[in-house]
Image (cartoon, one colour):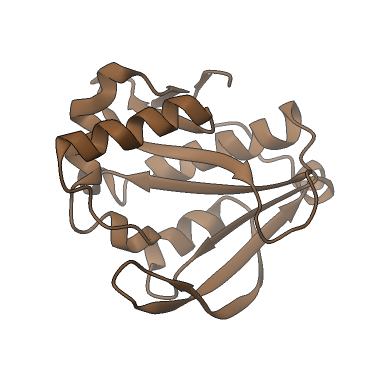
Length: 182
């Protein structure tokens, strides 16, 4: 996993020393439910999840350059909805104190460039729940095209069932638009 730099962010692999900042944002009640996971309940749980992030190596830690603070994550993993190895999916999470400032769009654009320029990815997808308009804006600003809605496709830990609003971008579309690296 390469380290990337954008105008305001350093995207790097997670480290054990990220635990305090990681727990600070993943334990917030407004964060996890927007992406389908419960708020992290304890420092011990955060340590376990962070350990998985480090082991899998699919998620970048989003570090604000000016402060050095870990403010979120963006990940690139195999797309579970497509039955081939050249399909990837992007996911992300951000500390609420940084919402609405363009950080996530900046990070997502960098990962889009990475996926198509540095890996064998042919199609990249992203999705959100219908009520998560912030995520929708990030996806659309990053150049993804609406693909459709998979109705009643995800059950949360609390038993709620949500639709997935799906978007994608092919490598050909990316090359035609050539999203400028942030």
